[in-house]
Length: 615
Image (cartoon, rainbow, N blue to C red; front, side, top):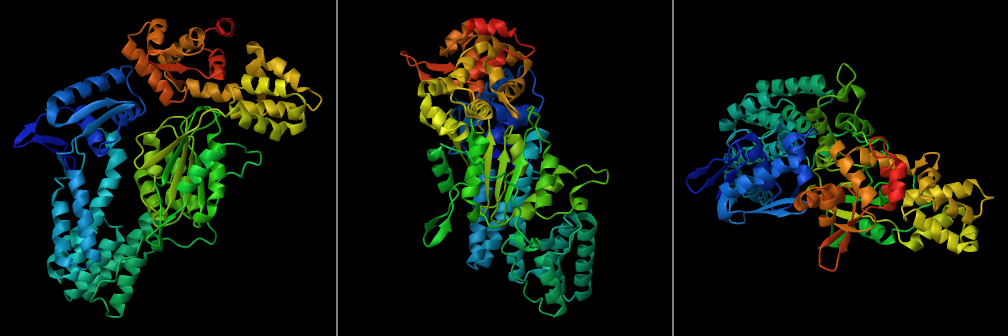
């Protein structure tokens, strides 16, 4: 079995071409193959198929595509349902993307070891796998997410192959190819430096000089920057008549970036009243700290995700971790919030503009003439150029989904990305996740004590425990309750416990200044489609405590499989808790108590009194 992604997406079984018809089917196949055996979640597939506006029947349509694809590919490919999505395993199949990566790594290793003939031939074999633009017949959403990194990998392999050919004295054969490539990619400085070297060695010094000056003008006009180290070194070598050997390429793109007078620090201040989460804190810090391997620093996975329900303390933990490991990232600590308070997803272009400005880019380089952000593709290119090779920690707070994250992830191993999200972003490549639950009782009491005062907790321990239980041990609610106590030193703890004991007034009591439990939780609920909100309401009203998918199916009047899919989507969005198994081994679910109360306050839900009577 063979799969082609470096060109039009195709599948072959020996000499027989498998008819994978339709853009949607080819997109599903490509997404599964690019995951390389990892599970691709339903949500991720929906985003790659329909972007931000999926149809009401998106889940059923994905199921249909998978069934058809399974029949087309046959028994040689294992395409299975694995929560929260689907997994394709084809260990015996040849996938051109995987083969390209293997050959490209072999070619670079041969270059490093100065086996130039082998390097040139191996890299040529890798490039021959490209049958045109990659992913040529998939949806624009998948192409936008995956194509930039594939094209960048192809260009890197091409530049290494040309470097090997130049070192082998093949400059006469390269001038026409390099002239075409520089015309196609005018701001790619390494290609232009290679063209200058080839022209100079062919005795065409004036044309080599012209190539440099044309490149300087293009960089100034299109990007507003001066030539970087590759192009500058080639020019200086040309003037000194030392361009017989091409200068070694810069170790990273970092050298092309002006050094900032001080590294940017954008992360919020360290929370002074942070407590608990010691185990999660230690694990995250260890994974962001290099360990020694053969005498050299070696990093673990550099994309760390913190997930959990709204108000569980994801951002506070991430900020504390970022401050603790700041010395490991001397080039800066960046921060971007990816959702507004009302749940609106931040514009990717505006986020990139903010980060690029912090990295030293001027407004004219990142804004279009009308004041709006420049094209996303250009901003992503600038962002990855600015960050390549630097030791940066980037905190991306409250990410909506994988599609939003893709342009903001870094390609370098020297930097790290720390992401918080209420969704479980299982499809982020190379990521590692910490899932936060509400706090333990002891941690909850410590948080109350730190904000409201330890004397009040110790004076009325039973009332303090009652407050903790009424808050569902949710850090946001605990902070709101503690803030009310701190603002009312004349209140005994029993007074607040008594007010929180009444479900009819509990949510209102948990609102102090900007700490508003109902606002935060309702924003998360309103992000769900209206049809889902209606089902959430019905469950919140009728399903007190734990319930199974079968019980939910009865309450929602849905088939059991459909009900289970719905419940799992809520678990993935951290709006429902998976609560172990019942006596028969069936998964159980339950709402956080404050989410149940919040559901009653939404305008398009039944009246609050109906829910409160049910609770």
